[in-house]
Length: 359
Image (tube, rainbow, N blue to C red; front, side):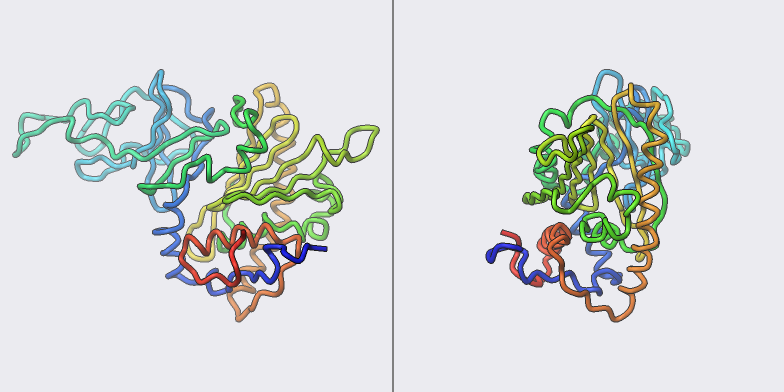
């Protein structure tokens, strides 16, 4: 039973209209997404001396890794006439220079212009230093490259507050990409995010998959930070049953649409649901671990795929329900992590909160 002063008492879910409105989706792109950092690639996927072109929401993004330096992030467009310097690809490509295929402007991997074709013939005075690539803020955390698309993002350590506190130095142990999984979901990103925060459905919807990993509800441990929340469940110790203290399987929910799973053996899984067009989002899963764990990557990603496929049917059905005149029902105590993230979303979006904010 919850204490009388439970900050989630009387909390209501977000209105269904917020899951199906084009104007809300546009405001999310302009206000919500720029407030945060976004995971874009595993560090091991971008070796030194390589570059990778990808899409971040509606922005063409170019990641580079100059030899001897940290990764960098730029808009994938030549400042001259806007043409992409590299085409999108599934894997990074080795390169020493970036050459625009339109007019041959050539850039170093640090974004500085090295040469422009026929420089002496521009109609106005031309200086190379005036034409660098447009750079975005880039950071490393948990062997993952994070990029900010807004001018003043929340500090990444605040965005991942409970992750930093619970994992400590273990977050920064070197990890490589063991396996990955991607696909589209026919639902608004908030439905997918809500579902992955939903501890109420696990035993019912995933009895033979995720529930076996997380164990009985009576052993659940929850924490709520300013931006991240946590479900911790004990991992059975052979011969002694479930240890309610250690070790634990940790499931973090974080803005804007991120989930981080941490196992006692050092593996991390990063799950995210970046929005696409209205009513669709992308499912991205990266499994990271020690290079010595590479052999187990295929089996572990298959375990993740199994329960995520079970969730696919649920979230796509929920999207159809939200498209009707649904009025979401009451929140269960095992749905508090949903309420926590929804309150943060409402605050950043400038919405009238459905009830008092989380204390």
